[in-house]
Length: 175
Image (cartoon, rainbow, N blue to C red; front, top):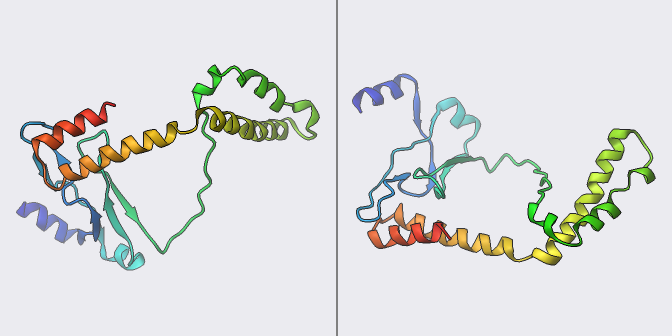
């Protein structure tokens, strides 16, 4: 550890301000859970001056035994466009094929082939979203609710580990 500390000083690195979990790893054992802080986010003086409000956030590990670290920079905002997600289960719905045939109408669109393709896909997006929300809504919320349960249990394990919580976390994660 002494050599590591000297190397960090020589490289002029120091630990970034952090939020979130106290520990970043746990041994994934039900009977004798152990949590430790083994992951650190390091920055230098120049970076700290360029982004003074930045901090790292140690998040819940979800499927891993390590907590991921995400740097957040409140002063830097960017517009994120939400990509279209195709939900494969809609293919099995009886209305799927007719909905796709109605929405996919390249012949009526004027423009280059690339424009026709892009426009048809954009029209398809609305139809598939409607089909999914009409017949499958609520699934996403149930998944989010279950993920929230697991997240709460993982937060407890990385704060104060105990065997009962570890067993319950394993059960909830497999649901």
